[in-house]
Image (spheres, rainbow, N blue to C red):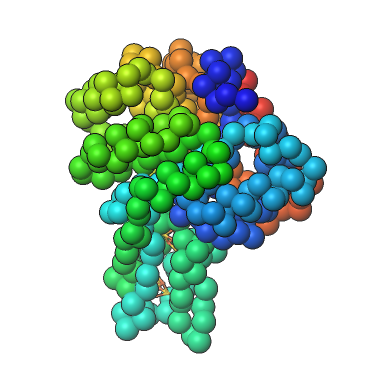
Length: 303
Ligand code: SF4
Ligand code: SF4
């Protein structure tokens, strides 16, 4: 199987397990449902444990791991996607609001105070409306990411670029040292039209062609609702990049309405990546109910 060839032939559905999601039980639960429901690709936290959990779950489900595509996703140190929440208990009023807001069940009460389970935190900042809450950077080493992707023969490395500085050296390092496909995740919040043009033209030059993916991210980690409004920025972002001739996946606020909106806007694209909404619709459901929901989402995304 060749990822770019498949993208030439059909639109794909990629399940985003969550860049910061190191909760192996949750990863297993999601992969079990989405490999059964017809997902084409899985986007995984860049750790050996997470990759092995995805492979083992697919095999245990009676499927062939070679029938799916895989990417590992990373941001660089300082990128919002790589940050983890922490709580200062001295400032905490123990109101419990953050627990209710967290979509990952990453905040739990322990000894009367809330505590963050960092392996579950994806840095979405839905809890970030309180003086007791702050965010810490995770240290990211690009060499290690490339090694994991190479060792496990993964199809793609996705680099989130939600930071002020464009990491030229890291992009060049991936192009030089990784045999698979490069994907750059660009969000509308951090990229003006001019900044997109500068970056994409540079990468086309370094890569020798436009044969890489741009994940057109509306507002990162903003999904959860099934409305045109949440998916609007992803479609707008894809519109801006479609003239460069790269492959395009839509993400960031994507849902069952994304393909419909893209069609209304006559958008050329190669697939849809869904994270927050895909995870939300299968939460707290039986396996059978969850598979029905997941199939509905995948069908809507691929039509
Ligand atoms: S961290 Fe903030 S939101 Fe959470 S329980 Fe404490 S005061 Fe409430
Ligand atoms: S709401 Fe988001 S940022 Fe806050 S703890 Fe949960 S996953 Fe982490």
